[in-house]
Amino acid sequence: KQEVTQIPAALSVPEGENLVLNCSFTDSAIYNLQWFRQDPGKGLTSLLLIQSSQREQTSGRLNASLDKSSGRSTLYIAASQPGDSATYLCAVRSGYSTLTFGKGTMLLVSP
Amino acid sequence: GAVVSQHPSRVICKSGTSVKIECRSLDFQATTMFWYRQFPKQSLMLMATSNEGSKATYEQGVEKDKFLINHASLTLSTLTVTSAHPEDSSFYICSARAPLAGGPATDTQYFGPGTRLTVL
Image (cartoon, rainbow over all chains, first blue to last red; front, side, top):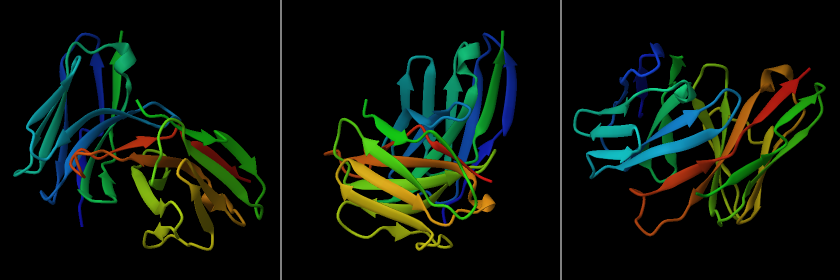
């Protein structure tokens, strides 16, 4: 059974810092990995999707890497801003209908 | 990007009543929709997968007679919580799969904004 772990559970940083969120998964037989953002009381917004054959994806200040063999992914946020404050969820697709989520990292960026 | 809507966004009901939540894919046809529930500070837990025109597939431990799912069209799925009890209070999120030519590696799901259910 696939298990996804995210570290840290919570992170508080001052504005402007670069930061890294970590995600690990137990079964490396995945189709892809996605990073989502969830604001309090809201649904999920897809940030980046990395296919199993890819090593990284970039979108603006966000960069996600994937090391499938070691079961790890990182989300790098450059020059953090207060608007980046949210919970970040990592999810892996290891089956046609199976998307397994981690518990998320709650990020607070203070002005 | 693809948009998924949910209605209502928030509902409060009395114990024993039934509540229906609608999920719509607004600008694409979704052959598969998913229903998740999320408890505070917890991850999303898949409840069931529904394919248009067929019966939903429920995850282990999810009561199919309590959580009725209907996927009558390619743009609409509904979740009905029957005889709701306080322990059913949760955040329910639907998701729709957008079919892509690249196969499951490019497969992505779009999520609705969620419905907060409170059962008194």
